[in-house]
Amino acid sequence: MFKNILIIAPHADDEILGCGGLISKFSKLKVNIHVAVMTNASKGDSKLFSKSKIKVIRNECLKANKRIGVKKVFFFNFPAPKLDQYPIYKISEKINNLIKKIKCETVFLPYGNDIHKDHQCIYEASLVACRPIDDNLVRNIFCYETLSETEWGLVGFHPNYYEILTNEDLKNKISAFREYKSQIKNNFHPRSEKGIKNLAKYRGNNISQENAEAFKIIRLISK
Image 1 (cartoon, helix red, strand yellow):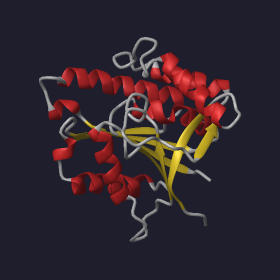
Image 2 (tube, one colour):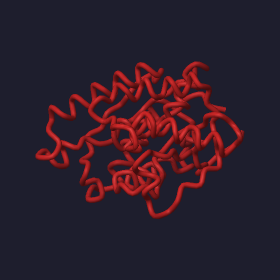
Image 3 (cartoon, helix red, strand yellow):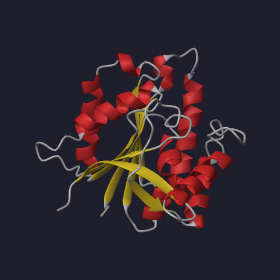
């Protein structure tokens, strides 16, 4: 079903947390997987997020995605944490242009009810960019869950699509996330190795499997 995937991440590391197992699984099947990291926090608040810190995180992002099999990472510079004050149409336009450039038919988005405003804004802008009009190539839209963002939102995440993960896929996901040395947390924090393992086990239990990643179908168009 998948040939050319775009994973849209509000921040660097969201793509691995939400889709790392899927990336591992489908990259081995020679599916083209691209990642778009939409924000640059130093643009939104340089006092909290320096240019040097963002450079470190983006280098970690490139290493993580290369390790797990992503074809290319695209970086945008929309101003986190002020994204809710930025015109949505400008974000949508960039996403739409990227969709045309890489010719993707399947898009993975952050969940629209995540607690983080940036995730909500990127979700909304992406839906506009993926409207099924004017020969838009996007046929399939899924939402992923992001540890420490999705589970703390006011509206729960109720998946209706699962990808079964092998132990190798889960290991690859964790290995990729380890590249985010500035972002990974200690055990018992959701964004820890233990948090990633626990969620994979829980989603696997949902479907009587050992490990899984869960998604919510927003649109699925069959040929």
